Length: 352
Image: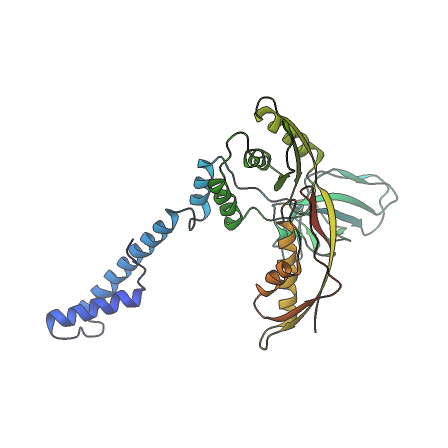
């Protein structure tokens, strides 16, 4: 397919050159001819940009967003939703009351800058004579950005709050992003290169991973008539409810005469101590934060049975702009069996 990705200036220059070639003179600035060429160049640029966008959406290797979702739907794959961050918020009175104060479920709270919202998931009471209550709360939407530090959620939005202050004494955790285009594309490409046929490993992995909440599944070498499978979410085990749903769904769709045994993955905790040097001109604190985010995201997206090596972690660190060099302290490569999932226990990133 011909390349149509011309910039606006390139289109306008070509028009001006052609005008000069045909007329023998250059269109004057702000002349009627130049204005017409600028308007027409803008429209042509808009059309060529749209054509380039459509060209990319025609192929699974370059499609994005809704178009990629449509490719996934053709294979029975759907984009996985992320998890909502969870935590607890303290509601504190200025002075104790002479009666019980009920805090209804569904109170909307927000961070100090008003950019991230959280909703209480239970009702609670500040008992007579007391001045506070801890209330379970979750993020309004999924996403890692909701894993805020302590003392970040400070404002009540949808509740009469005179005389009540709020804060989260510990950080919100567990928030994960929706499956990215690249993650979804990888699953589609894996499906295309190793199509499930009703009896192979790919078939059973695809069944398990189609259940909402299951990020990855792994199979052992199967015995005749018996399949052993372990599943996990993003950087954690799935809930018992999701495990039960997965068992039911896989057993409903398994091949006749086959028994399937499905279990939680065994979590293997990994601690990392990373030292980095920062390139000149980059803000060290910002680079450190980006390295932490990159490593945390990497571990969230690891599949069951994936081994952890220093080389893989190094690739993640070097993907962050501004990193000059790095070292890992007291780290040894970890080989994972099919039933084990590496999870990040502690992470320290410092500048040297």
